[in-house]
Length: 351
Image (cartoon, rainbow, N blue to C red):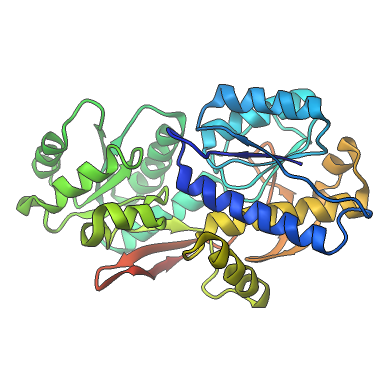
């Protein structure tokens, strides 16, 4: 089984490490239980480094090596490139973490996804903003299909409800100039639609240090504060920044057991991305055991897969506006790091 994971910069390497931990743990458990029809399951890992071209080339290579399916990937733009290549080659691809709605240009039988579509999760985030009384929203953004899609989704949800969205180019503005723009606009929230650690960390520090912006909520819907390196870089300044997380309020027995083993592997609390990795291999294993190892049979199994995942029962369906087989939906939370204890998370809103 091929596994696409961002393990080096400019990819979000910490997310990749968590994703790989989940994939690898599940594969180890499959093999401890006898493998697939008595044969061991091998993960053939390729580092995408957040590069769409590199991901597409990896799918070509993995297809040539004879993998039965491709799994993984965290970055949406990279996953889209991998999905397009998998579709063209007729290789099943189960995307673990990428959320961009348009994962493929046209509907395809070859691709399925575990993560919720961006339109689903970000609407929940916009609803949270309105409930918190935040209607004058500024977004610090960088050029990207993913960030542009997020901005559009926020505007489409907020505008009919009296909200406004001001776009600020994080590449053109220094953090200090961005603070001036927030003050001039009277923004009540700033959303970080930018890369981590640059320029997200300097922006947070600048806003936190500006007395004019003491009442401005900083948000990061894409989930930057989920990982330990965020806390290490920002400490108290990184707390109280709401983000999207794809976990239930309470894990069941399976989730608790997997979470404990992931913590041992990672040496820290597992993120939701690690659970996505475990669920990915578990879904593909169920397809392989029930439908065989032919690629066409695996792709044909998406609508018939029924698996107990770490975060609930997993089934795939066709969702309007989305061209891949979709789990609709994984649990969605809006969470932040507790200012009193930045190593602890608070659930602020549930989707």
